[in-house]
Each structure stands twice: as structure tokens, then as C-alpha cells.
Amino acid sequence: MPLSLWICCSFALLCTALRAQAPQNAALAGGAAPVAPIAATNPFSSEADIQQGSALFQAHCAVCHGATGEGGRGADLTAGLYRRGGRDPELYASIRFGIPGTDMAPVRVTDDAVWKLVAFVKRLGSQGLREKAPGDPIAGRQVFQTMSCVVCHSVAKEGGTLGPDLTDVGRRRGLKFLAESLAKPEADIPIAYRAVEVVLKSGATVSGIRLNRDDLSIQLRDPGDNFRSFLMANVKEIRYDKPALMPSYAALDPKDFTDVIAYLNSLKGAP
Ligand code: HEC
Ligand code: HEC
Image (cartoon, rainbow, N blue to C red; front, side, top):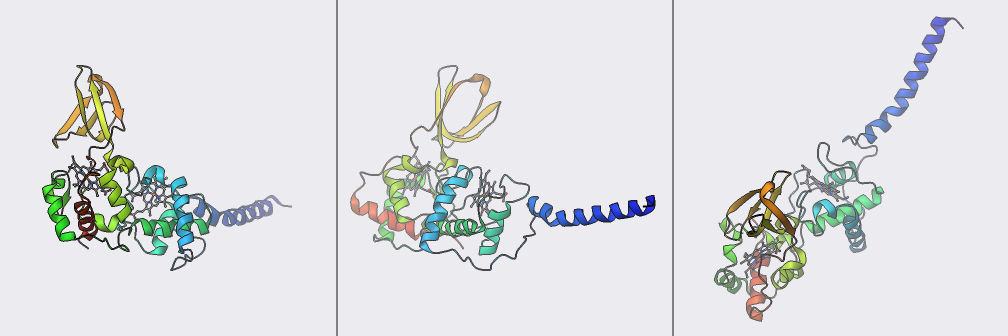
């Protein structure tokens, strides 16, 4: 065949081959364009699906989002507020395709499993909404003030900052979690509140909540709410996973305990 015809033919073949690959490449690149349209409502949201979603979450997501979704390297998934959208198809897209330009990569599981993860993520964001606490929230508010919970916790911008803000804790956390936070604070420490103990070469020991650590320095907030920074050159040892900074309230009067839980459960946040 003449050379010009040969070039033409090869070019056409090459074009066909490239076009056949194009959609696949777009999907591989994790682009926002899904191959099939995403269902408007989650087809997998039964209680059994949520349980399976929970197991999938522990296996694929907890490393970044924390065992109870409290966040860490990944976003906090307990607040029920999503920067990338909280409707079923939006959550599906965040999980199926990942979030380009961030640590959040596409998850390698089946489409059905992604829907089960969506169901579980929604459950994480509304733990307390379906529950009604038995105690008296008004009396519990009093306990909260007198037991000096406010020294470490803020509600509606009032109070300390050593512990998590509790303004919407009644939505984020179920009753079981709340009771455990009070009785056994060390059981479930959110990643962001890991206590740390820094032993300096001078012999001094400073404990607090780890804020940041890089090759050169470590920063923490001490129990007096002071920001402290230490050069690694002066640090002898860093001990993680010290017991929780929050004292246990297991010995609290049982009525006070039930009431303060009812108060926490009543805190559903601003929106
Ligand atoms: C390597 C760490 C990492 C893993 C593993 C990971 N994520 Fe993420 N995820 C992130 C980060 C970081 C963000 C925040 C991205 C941003 O918006 O900047 C995020 C965001 C999200 C969002 C969007 C939150 C919002 O505000 O819109 C959802 C939903 C989510 N992740 C669910 C999951 C689920 C479910 C899994 C497991 C299949 C998972 N992630 C695995 C790091 C991770
Ligand atoms: C010395 C400071 C301190 C005091 C006092 C304190 N807390 Fe805490 N609290 C923390 C810290 C730090 C955390 C996060 C780490 C952990 O779970 O131990 C926390 C966690 C919690 C959580 C879980 C919040 C979440 O979003 O997961 C609840 C609920 C809570 N505290 C309630 C209380 C109540 C109620 C009191 C008073 C009876 C109280 N705290 C007193 C420091 C404190």
C-alpha cells in the first residue's frame, strides 16, 4: 500500500484505540465524572447494611477518621456537617471517587459496599438524634457547672478549651458513648485529644495534649491551657497514650450522673 494511505490507516487505528481508552482513563484518574449515574437515595440503608458499613469503616477508614469517626488525619464525621455535601449521592461520590488534592483516596470496594459505608457515615453524624435520655437536663446543667466540667469544656463559646467543645455533643454522640466518656474517659480518646508526656533532657516532664509534631519541635497544650513548644534537640523522650486528661466521674452520685448525661444529650448545636 502507498505510504500516505498507510499513515492514514495507522492514524485512524490509533485514534480509535485512544478513544476506547479515554473513559477508562477518566475513571482511573478519580475524576468527578461517574461512569453510571449515582442513585438519588441509598439502596442499602437497613440496620444490617449499617452494621456491615461499620465493619467496612473500621477496615478502610478508621485509620484516618478515627474508630468513632471523630477525625484526625481525616475529617470529623460525627458532626453531621459535610463540606463536600451530605446528601446520599454526594457522600457516595466523596467515598467512591475520593477527594482530589487531599489524602482521601478512592476506596477499593464494591459499589454496594460504598453505599453501606454511606449509611454508616450518616449514622455516625447523628448518633444522639434518635435517643432520649432519662435524666433531668436542667438539673444536669447545674451539675455540669458545679463539677467544673466548664473548666475544660465549652458550650456555646463559654468555657475552657482543653477538652472538646460540647455545643453539639448531644447530636454527635449516643447515650452509651456519653456515659462511657464520663465513667471511663480513657476508653475512647479522640485522635485529636491524645495526651502526651514530654521528658526534657533537663529532667523536667511536661504533659498535655499534643497539638503538632514535626522533625524540629513538638507543641502541646498543658493542663493550665498554656501553649508549650519544645525543640526536639532538648527533648529526651516523648511518651504517647498517657491516661486521659479528663478525670473519671464513675464515682459521681448516680442521679447527678444520669442528669448530666441528659444535659449533654440536650446539646444539639446551633443549626
Ligand atoms: C488516608 C486518609 C483517609 C482515609 C483512609 C479515608 N479518608 Fe475520608 N477524608 C480524608 C480527608 C483528609 C478528608 C478531608 C478532605 C477535605 O475535604 O479536605 C476526608 C473526607 C471525607 C469525607 C467528606 C467529609 C466532608 O466534610 O464532606 C467523607 C464522607 C469521608 N472522608 C469518608 C471516608 C470513608 C467512608 C472512608 C473509608 C472508605 C474514608 N473516608 C477513608 C482522609 C481519609
Ligand atoms: C481536666 C479537664 C477536663 C474536665 C474537668 C472534664 N473533661 Fe471532659 N474531656 C476532657 C478531654 C481532654 C476530653 C477528650 C479526651 C478524652 O476523652 O479523655 C474530654 C472528653 C469529654 C467528652 C467526650 C466528647 C466527645 O466529643 O467525644 C464528654 C462528653 C465530656 N468530656 C464531658 C465532661 C463532663 C460532663 C465533665 C464534668 C463532669 C467533664 N467532661 C470534665 C477534659 C476534661
